[in-house]
Length: 151
Image 1 (spheres, helix red, strand yellow):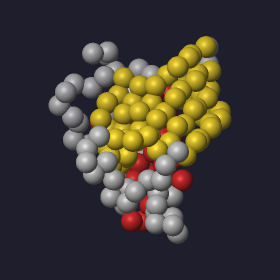
Image 2 (cartoon, helix red, strand yellow; image 1 turned 135 degrees about the horizontal axis):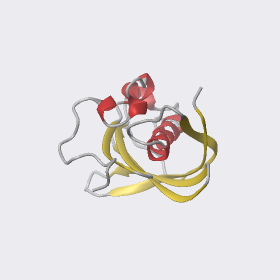
Image 3 (spheres, one colour; image 1 turned 120 degrees about the vertical axis):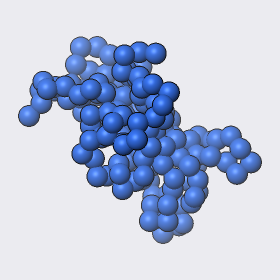
């Protein structure tokens, strides 16, 4: 287990997992739960609720994007936070592969692929649970990060 990876017993508050979750009303509203955090890696989940659907009755793309973006941010930044820098998105590409179905558990898994100085490259895969068990990939997100001075 790395120094930033949490012990098997899960923290009771979302903000106990990562410094950026200590004041994150969007993640709270989405019902995000953290499954794992390590340097360059994050796994988070949320259940697709009625108010997260579009006019077709499937996941609004913005909700799937927001879940992937949150996993990206958690993987890019140290869990304990930094007084000097933050790592933010400099650009992303999102590919929607299948519709998100209401009531399903969505899981975003973020992994660092490359880090070079202040720039990084991350892949985030979003899956949804299946009624018969298992999961299927519904979206792929590739994020480019940049570490900048904290304001």
